[in-house]
Length: 489
Picture 1 (cartoon, rainbow, N blue to C red):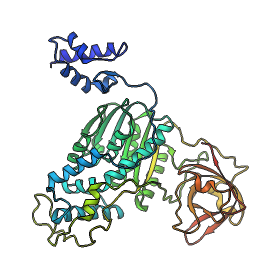
Picture 2: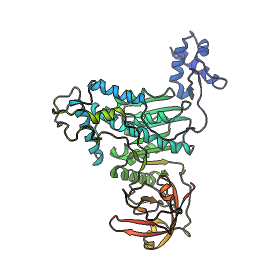
Picture 3: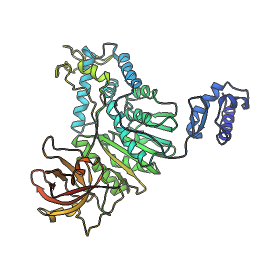
Picture 4: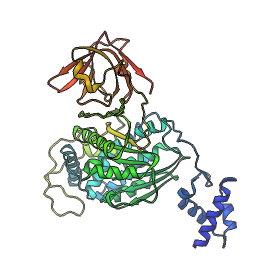
C-alpha cells in the first residue's frame, strides 16, 4: 500500500470517527485501488495511537473514551495462563523440554542466585540470554502484580486517562508491561514505549506479543541516558531501575521533564533495605533539585518540610499463586556436573548443590515493594495541612519525649513486629529520624492503627512519646489511653 492510500485511509478515519464506528469494509471503497479491507484494518491498527482509535471486538474502530480510566480492580491472584505458557515456551526453546533439570536447571538456578546477591549488595545485573530467562522466571510474576496495585491507586484517584501514553524505562523482560496490559480495560488505548538496551529485549519482545489489541507496543533498544522521545508521556514507569543507574537523579530529572503536566512518574523498587531506602533518597533529591511533588506514599503534610529519616517503607499485598515454571525449577533435578548455558563453553559456575529440590528458594510469589509516585503539578494523594497549635511536628519530637501528645501521620508500613506488639513505621514529612507507632493495648478507640491501609492518614490523640536508643528512633506508644482515627484524604 502506498503513501497516498494510507493518507486517504487516515482522512476517512478522521471524518468517520465523529460520525459512526469506522468499518474497514466501508473505508476500502473510498480509497484509490480499493485495497482489501484487511489491508485497511492493518493501516488503522498502525495509526491507532495517532488517531486516538480503539479496535472493537467486531473489527470496527471508534475513538478512545475521553475520560479517566474506569477499572474495577480488586487485586491480583495469578499470572495469566497465556503468559505462563509463553515463559515456558521460551524456556523449552532455549534448553529443551527438560529445562528445569540437570545442567540447564543448574544454570538457571545459579543465575537467579547471582542476581539476588547483586541486588542485596547494591550491585548491577548484567544481562545475557540465560540471565533474562532467569529474571522472567523469578521476577515477572511479582512485578506483574505490583504494578497493578500501584495503577489501581492512580485510577481510583482519576489520574489515568483512557488514552494513555506510557514510557517503561529499563523494561527488562516485561513484568510491568504485562501488568499494565492486564489492568487496563479493552476500551482503553495504550501507546506503550519500552526502553531496554540489554539482551533482555529478546524475552521482552516475545512476552509483549501477549498484550491486547489496543495496547500498542514499541521497543527502543537504547539506554535512557541517550533516548530522545517524540512527545511527552502520561505515565513513566521505572521498575527496579533507578538503583542500577550511575546517576539516577539526573535521569529522574529528565523523566520529569518528559511528563505531561498531569502525568505521574512511578518508581518501584524491591522491598529490601538497600533499594527501598535508596529510592527514598532519590525521591528527596528530585524534590529538592527538580521541584518534584511527592504524590504518595510519603506525603509531606507540613508546608516547606521534607523528611530526613531512613524510611525503610514498603507495601505488602497478598501473594499470588506460584506459577508452574517457578515450581518446576524449584523442584528440578540437580546435576553433579558444572552448569552451562545454551551454547556456552564449559562454565566456571559450580554444580547446583546448595539447596535440595523443593526448597522454595526459586519461588517468588510474594508481592511487596517500595514505591514513589512523583508529579510536577503539586497534586498529592493526601490533602491535609496540620495545625501546629494542636498537633506536634515530628521534626520537633525531641521536645516531647516521655510526654503524651497529639499528632498526625501517614502509615508507611504493615506490621513489622514479627510476633510482638504490632509495630508500624509512620511519618508526617518533617521527621529527621524514623518514628514507629507501637500498639501495646488494642481497643475499639485505637484499632484504626492496625486496620488503616498503607499510605493512610491517621490522627493520634494522647500518644506516649519514647526514645528507642537501640534503634535510634522514636516510639509512639499506643495504649489504652490513646485514640487513633483514620482521617479522610
